[in-house]
Image (cartoon, rainbow, N blue to C red; front, top):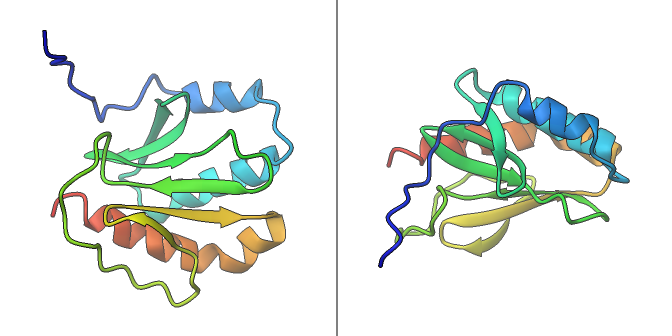
Length: 137
């Protein structure tokens, strides 16, 4: 029988990411919390939840997930939802060169430390805003 379960873009219960991070042991926890705050501040429509056992962010669909298994850098995976999409390569303005493309609809951004996040925060939020614009395309 085919799996007909739909992936919901509804974030999990309010406070669940905060609760998750409260008990989360990670060498870059402060950096993860800073990235989380920057993503949420990029657009008032962004919501968060725990999806794929990690802090994830959505507007209409999930579009970003923090890859918590990476302990050497804060890695954000940008995507267009739960399943890969057949799409042309996204046009994202990235003059700071933050994006590492993993496919036409997926990219990664890595920050090694808090200083890197603070230095690139405007460029990072600019990418997040552009990325969510592609969710409805």
